[in-house]
Image 1: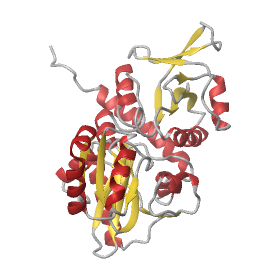
Image 2: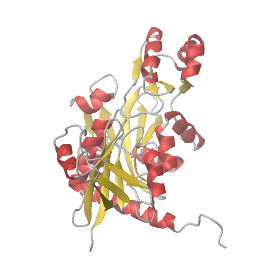
Image 3: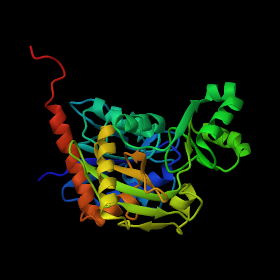
Image 4: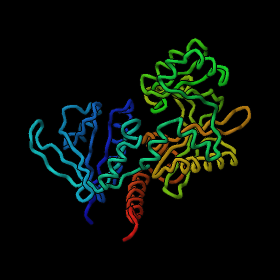
Length: 368
């Protein structure tokens, strides 16, 4: 059987560039090379697409992606593929056909529907959610509105954009503190990996926290702090998703920030989480409902809080391209649910092709 060419896309312009490199390296090492030929495609921090023989070796070394052969995606459904620079700095190019894409991009310009739209135009199957789910799941405000519309419990929050903050900062400060109380969390509406997030303990800290969030996005969400356990659940599938056993995070810092996630190995990940059977079942049910609420596809990780006093369960957010290293929570939860890392990667590639085939049979215009 002829192998299919799988482009594994990684890097990107977001603050989660390094996380993406780690996830992509683990995925490429797990892909069944008897069935698939791997085409590594990196995106530098400035947005330049890169490919060629050197990219995989550079990724193994975890170096930067600068000064590598450039690549251009061809958005032609009849001949989808890449043009890869043949000689560095020269004008020689070669064409490589692409049968499937695994976009291992976290955050803006990758997990937010941008590259998903590119693949739709190119007519290439790709792993993960489509344009709609990717974009609304990246925006924490729109995501929560959809959760609420589907009857899922979320914590109290407020949101505003840059012009509104600049014009109404004193009034907004009073509203935030009176309605949400302290402590609270201030976040960019569109980002991941806890980048740009601040925990605010006193009213005087709020302005600086908002300004920090506005460094990363034009819209800010402020959330009431929920006291309780941080629970995560992995979801796999398409129109009929299934949920894994849940896991629990015990962060090394005050909250699960970027340092606790990626730089400090003192955070404790418990999988499966020690939950009462009825609560675990509710977590898994809510995870699938959240997946359907944003119309996700392929994979997602849904994050929860369990209130330690009342036992109430809150849906915090959904990640449509969660961290995917061998020790990340998403694959670990499937491992304790009976699906190993290599099998999980294989299932995601198969799901992408099945969805592409199904949607390819839909009409785009009335029959003549």
